[in-house]
Structure formats: structure tokens, C-alpha cells
Length: 414
Image (cartoon, rainbow, N blue to C red):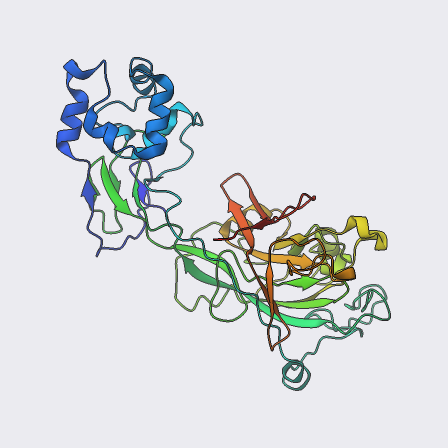
């Protein structure tokens, strides 16, 4: 939930236990002193850190800097400049302030690499599941066998090749939960970057310039065990080894009774797409398929489930079409952006065992950085091979990079 600023009409809850702080008054006075208009105050300069100081050094003198700050409305008692060491980024960061509240210390939270999700054991899904995955009519989703040819809810193809093994089965539920996007203090600002007063759920007013703590946000998240997360679970896959993911829509349960507000699909339906994968339409989150077959709706409604079958084979069986990273996300008609921004995102790195070229093992094949550990449950982790998701109000993307490809991958060694 964002901290509410004065242009909002509905205040949003905040954590009352947080000790709120304000901009130092002496710094405001120093910045407003007319005798100091031609140079940068030393106290503020020393707060900048290496990056800020480098930006100042580019100008060599503050005569180039201060007018620019004043032009942007930042070099004043109520300007962002004195509130955050990030303000001098205005010299190199020219985008209009895109969001309120302003995160004062971005990129300081630890990067958490997800562990590979665990598949459902063969004995569990074959013995305990009422509706078991399979190639027959009615086995692809919760709508069962309709008896209508072409709309009997079966997988078009159960295996990519006859020699392929049976699919590895995962179960992922979509749930309402919470996620904290930053532990940094934040500053409510207006569209020009000027601090503004803000409110809490009780209606208490906080003066302009008051630094606040950002409460946890309500999300629609994927859960493969252990709670819904953003980004969602990571499935480490391999070419030639099919995967079934049973997506269950539990967005109506809201166990924590969180305020879901009015963002996301109004009926909480969802339709999941594995981005960049070569997948049959019934498992592809295809809106046309969804409207004409299966649910005959924009997506799968609450308490519905669907078995998405990912054959994990390249388009046209062409090895040059192989990629190294997919990600899965909501694809519901008319509300894809809303549901994805709400949190329906998961990670799907895919490795190539053919010839040992890309196994997550730096001792063979392409020798891409990575130390692979095979787990007893059939999953595997690759240390130093780091997937990441980048999310803004404008777009959400994901990547994994150690080599140049259509979907790059990032490896990090410490």
C-alpha cells in the first residue's frame, strides 16, 4: 500500500509503531539562506556519497548545479534535495518524478535469490489428488469432459516426443498476501518532486517533509508452498523434460482479510502464460482459447484449476531456437497489466542438457558460471546463476543472463 498524500481521498493504513522523522530544520534554513545561493552547502555535499559527489564534480562548480536544482524546484526548504542524497541525481536522471512516495535509500535491501520450487511427489499426485493430471478428456482443467469434440478439455499433446519422460508435476496457487517492497524511509511528494503532507488511516496529518515507513502492499502472489511471494516461485526446467504446473485460483479466500482495493481483475479470474515458450494454446494462457473453450470466460475463475503442460522443446525442434529464460505471468483478457502489476509473476529458467552444453555446471559445455546441486525431490539449484525480475508501473520483465541470447541470463560471483 502506498503512503497516502494530500491529493488522495481515501487514506490507507500505515504501521503506527514506526517512528516518523522530518527533514532537519537547520538544513532547510541553510539551503534557504540567500547568502548561499551561489554554492552548494558543505553539510549537504558531505551527505551525497561517492555517486553524488561524482555528479557534482562533473559540473566542477556549483554555478552550474544550483540553478538546475532551482529550476526543478528542488533547491528549497520543501525540495527533495535536502530530504535525500538521491536528489543530485537530477543532474543525470532527468525523468519527471514518476512515483510517490519517493524511496530515499533505494537499492539497499538485500537481493534474495529464490530456491527452486519442489515438484509434487509422484506418490502424492497419483494417490492423493482427486483429479489427476493426464492425457485424457477432461483432465486438462477443472471443467472436465464436456463431450464436445474440440472442447473436451484435454491436452493436445502429452509428450513432445515419444521418448520423453512423463511430466514433472508442480502445484502453484494464486493467493492474496502481503509483500514489502522496501525497508527504506520514503517521502510523499507531488508531481514536481516537492514534499507534501500525508495522512494515515486514522486521518492524522503529517506535515510536508515528514519521512515515513512504507507499509506492506497487498499482492496477488503465486505460492508453491510457504506463502505467496513476489516474484513468485522459480521452476528450474530442462529441455526434453516436460513439466505440468497445476495453477489453482484461490484469490477469493483472502485468509488475512487484506484490503485488495480496486486493482486487478474485478472477478479475480486469471489466465497464466509462460512467456516465450513454445506451448499449445490450452496451456499458453491464450485469451481466444479461454473465451471459446475451457472456461468460456476471460480467464479461470476463483476455485478453478488448470494443468499447464510445458513440453520444454524448441520451436520446430530447432536447437537454435532454444532460449535460457522464461517467466510465467497472468495473461487475462483486459486485465493482464493489472494482474501482473498486482504480483502474478513467476520465474522459469530453462537449461539445455543436450551435449552438456548448458547444464548449470561451469565445468562443462559452455562453462557458464554456475554450480549445480541436484535435490532429492527432483529439482535442482544453480548457485551463481541469478534470475531477476524488474518491475515498474510501465512494464514488468524478467531475465537470467550469462550469455547473449534473446533472453539473457545474469551470473554473479561474490
